[in-house]
Image (cartoon, rainbow, N blue to C red; front, side, top):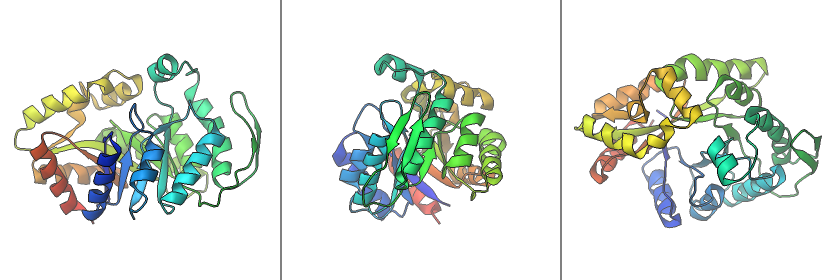
Length: 296
């Protein structure tokens, strides 16, 4: 099973230690969110320069970054990490875009499509001449660095179609088994096939806890993850599964139960599990040991 670690570390020293441990334990990669802590791309360049596994962002929000600036940043980081960067992008959420950054969240999927029209050629060392509704780029980038695959945080059908048509795949969070089986995998795969592209990667991010106390683990996970039940895009994913909140989506149970649950996601179309070990210190250690035993 292809398993990566999704780390929510904030301090650079913790990110560096987790990357080194993730590589040592045999996982395929390490993905880091871009929240209110360290800049994800810079953190990967600083903490992952000597690693040999994939290093991914899950995800960088596009609104505060012009495509030229993001392309320069991503290519520079990819040079530093030896061409192992996976650039995960997303449109973030209305409260962050409008309230924190003071920017427009109008028609986010349309904006992302236009953004990619500029970004993807820039990453491929091509000249861009684009005068769009919200994106204007007349430039090329002169950086001696390999291009990096782009992944979209695609939840709904329009985003999944965009990901399948233009990018290497999707990296998800708070998406359940039935949604992967009936929406995520069929939609993105159909879009890629229609565009004559290779089958996309479907990286499924999940909170995972190996424990003997399932009820307590779910309760604590619900407390730490409650924000995801209030954001419309994640709430829609939970509603598709008929779940009350994020705690119900967590993969929780014994080693055998966790292995069975993660295997079901692979059978449903996931190509990689980006697992975020949760729970007490003891539970997180037990979870990592379980996940490492499933790597193939």
